[in-house]
Length: 78
Image 1 (cartoon, one colour):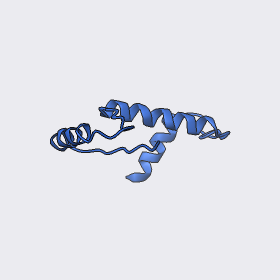
Image 2 (cartoon, helix red, strand yellow; image 1 turned 180 degrees about the horizontal axis):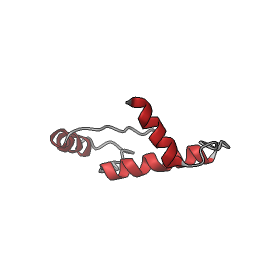
Image 3 (cartoon, one colour; image 1 turned 45 degrees about the horizontal axis):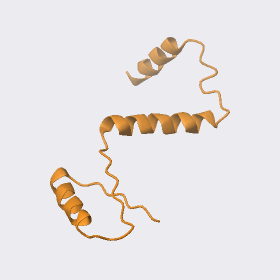
């Protein structure tokens, strides 16, 4: 079985869903998923966590005081 994912606006969604439901194709299973920004943000955060958990890198190891480091970076912009 294959999957197809489409993202459409609300008006088109209703028409496409109507069409798919009326096709009467054996083996067609419609799974509705209302993607929201919150889900997308959570998915992105989880994906990043998984990615960085696989890495053995200590970022910013040489920075003792993050606030002071940040101030110095900003001073360079002026």
